[in-house]
Length: 119
Length: 193
Image (tube, rainbow over all chains, first blue to last red; front, side):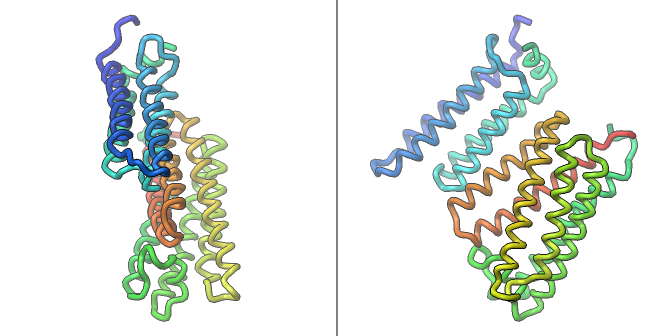
């Protein structure tokens, strides 16, 4: 199976967009106060998770579809927790959660599951 | 998968009944006691209200607890794996302690016994949520497994970011939502025996 289905490319793209969006949020919500470091670290954590998920949608990706689903659910859980704790801006949290939900939707297609189960 | 409805669907409906009863009880009690404020007062304060709200709270908790026990029994009897079985047992214990929350109200003694019963109930519900998540994951129902985990993360966030009353109120709402989704899972994943 050398040809990557379009849905898998969409999933990879969504992961990259999520990561970039997290980095943008990190820059937009940066303030010069000392306790902003925690907020920045949490945005960076979510960005890392998104980039990790994006990497799973490549030809050399090592995760099966269940692992990707688990990581996406973990990402949503963390985004929800940080948004509720008021570390994340509400609108930023909603956008990042929406991107993650789209990733889960992409992974749920039978053709995606078939390609990701090649491992 | 949904060819035949078996008896576990009837047990699943008790989960939905429990959610409906508690929601109606809470809304009616809050309406009867105008001094109770969401986010400022804990739900247990309705049990010691000077109005009829206390009756709604007490009987509502007992009835919800009874429905939760039946829901838990159904999950245990029709469990597909150890996760569902243990989740059902935890739900039975949570239902029992919820009924005790309605019986042992805050004005009995210095309120410590009520606190103990309420916190124990919350711990059993947490254990039930984790067990059901594991059981659903094992059965390859990943999305159903993810819902309680996301809800638990949100409740942790509520505990960190808000006061006790607000966190408790929203945590109860999220727990009711979870029980509803778990009941729907039980109905939707019914298999022919």
